[in-house]
Image (cartoon, rainbow, N blue to C red; front, top):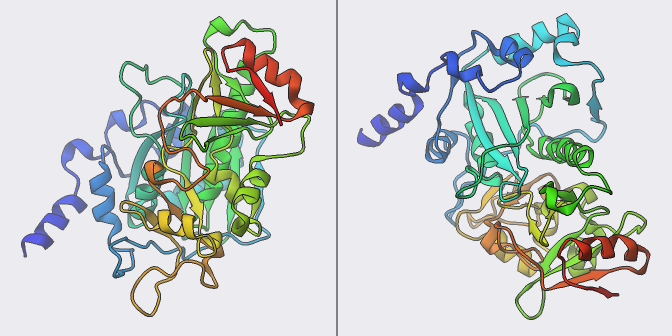
Length: 383
């Protein structure tokens, strides 16, 4: 009885968490108008989302909550983009979207992408109450607060997701930094869209001739990524824009079991792109990386880390022994959010700002590498 009462308390937010004038204060006006009058719960903690998400998770004997993927993304579903602002989307579409969002209370979830960087992206997501596990998964990937002394600045991305829609739709509205995901309970399309919108913002903010002292972040082109070298310190592989090699290829070479995993899933695991700042600092895009479940069973190191305490699995199988059975048929659609400190090699294990000991480049990227050297990175080594 005590446990049930505690759950009811969590499931019924206090009055100061209910919809009020503050719920839409930080939203773009067109999005605030779309959500106006709907029941929205705000101020939810990670623990609140975890408890609410228990109603959808699957039990297992290894202590990790396994969340289902009941509406995986269909192969033919493409990410679409609207050239119109939110207010100019078709009225019938906005009316149907509002009706879908109003079927049950919404949970407002907030976090930061690239949270340790000088220019993070604020992510504000809305999920139906019954999909609280999606909010829990998202806050497990994002940073919840800026670093000490850091201003909580950065442009906002608004994320609306309704998994129960009859048809799948992935729509981005760059003019309003809005993501609309219908018909799927997979978080990864929204993560990729957040990467893309942030990439555009950084690209438009940084110019080649801009002095490094301006403090603006510089985008590392071509899929650069840091990893922990043999000496235990961070190193950076810099693949210039003229080089065909990308993060996915490097990762597959270091972990052969991942060669058959979709490139987009590997790009998310590597949190591409990373941010370079004056003085040679790097920071990760995700606080905790979402690892693709399809390759975890074939890689002992990745499998071990995916079962680390506080990992958050989505769409993986429960074996006959009651434990998580990574690598089984059907796991291709799943993923596991792994605590950053337990990330498998070669992923970096720190979510804070880091400064690499070595910079490894390809000969075709020498010009870009020298530009990095000029803003404080260690001298480039040719590979």
